[in-house]
Amino acid sequence: MKVLLVDDDPVFLELSKTFLEVFHDINSDTVESAGKALEKLDERSYDVVVSDYDMPCVDGISFLKIIRDKKIDIPFILFTGVGKEEIMS
Image (cartoon, rainbow, N blue to C red; front, side, top):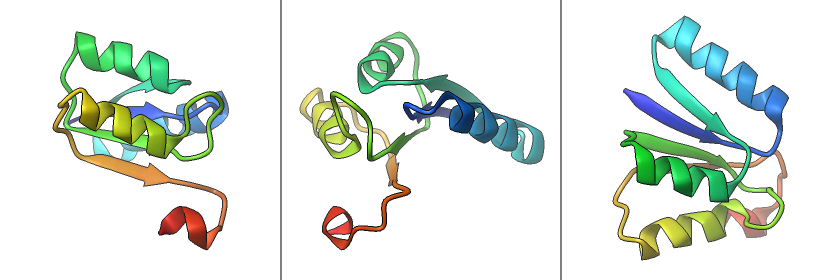
């Protein structure tokens, strides 16, 4: 399995990558923006994208819409540290 992790927090990215690889033997690439993630998706194939919601320039929901508009059919997991119900809906 190959995972693309997208978050503007480099510390969180490194912790997530280490957790997936050490404890679950899951390969992952990390990027700090939706734009860089789109470049990675053009270069390689992934089994899933895991993205933060709250990122500068392009938030996670807008990023998902861009992926779907480009006809990239990949599972997408959106997470947030912000506990707002309007985000969840």
